[in-house]
Image (cartoon, rainbow, N blue to C red; front, side, top):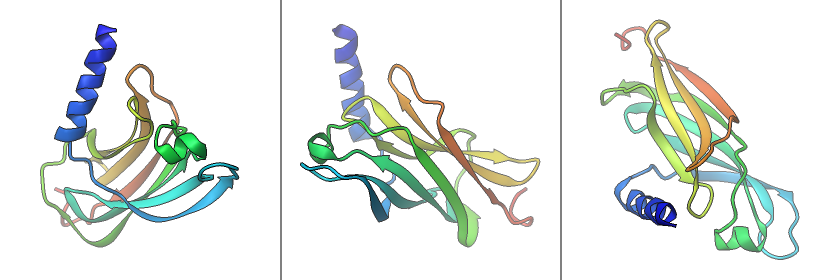
Amino acid sequence: MKCLRKALQIGIVAAFVANPLAAEEIGSVSTVFKMLGPNDKIVVEAFDDPKVTGVTCYLSRAKKGGISGGLGVAEDTSDASIACRQVGVLTITGKIKDGETVFQKDTSLLFKTLQVVRFHDTKRNVLIYLVYSDRIIEGSPKNSISVVPIPAAQGK
């Protein structure tokens, strides 16, 4: 019980201290009809990399419906896909750290998070974006990656 209380406190503090980027919902499609509450669906969202202007990532992810989904207490599955693209002049505005979280979204009331982390492959001069889901106890091996080349003049 003490461990659960501590985990809840950490989650509440993290929710207020962390400033995860907000994604812009682009659209969605229904996948399962629900008699009560919203349908299950696949949501497509976009967010811009906070340290690399000119890069936008598009996420598609599963979102539970029904009564629990409508109330925000359902746990979404770990199914997600990502596609990141250069959409303007690519400018790195901060120090790039491998494994740095560039986006996160809670996919259950307290314990599950969908995250996007960025890596820099200096040998090939590309940015790699990885989307995955984790939990306090156990995450999921489901993942997806996307790669954005850095123009030769900017990489080194």
